[in-house]
Image (cartoon, rainbow, N blue to C red):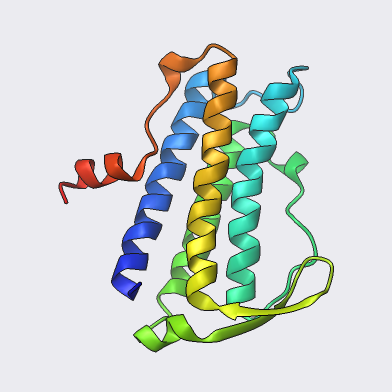
Length: 170
């Protein structure tokens, strides 16, 4: 994949995460504490959304030479508003990193990092960038499934890549 293709996929990722935020807002409002509803499915939705942000942050940190040792604390992002703001903050940090990639060769570099438990690992930047995109898709799908299980089908908005391409007209 090229830098241009990755840029498009990360624009899609931002678009899909924005749509996820819209669904959470439609389902629960901005200020509802999703951890205090008493519904384990709602808590699972909140935790999955924060997991998407946290995973993106961990991988971006690794790409920038750091090796985080823990996921974000999901209790710090209990509301749809807090989740949306966290997505926005991570988006800005990611694009700051992405702009540092100036040549196609940057994508083939082998990155050395440590997993959360401290195990050393190496892999190409391109595989990490691909993983972050597919990982977010997977968890957005889980959230969509949980909203369906709650009977909230009318609130769903497509986060499919093809919908993104169609809306962009490309």
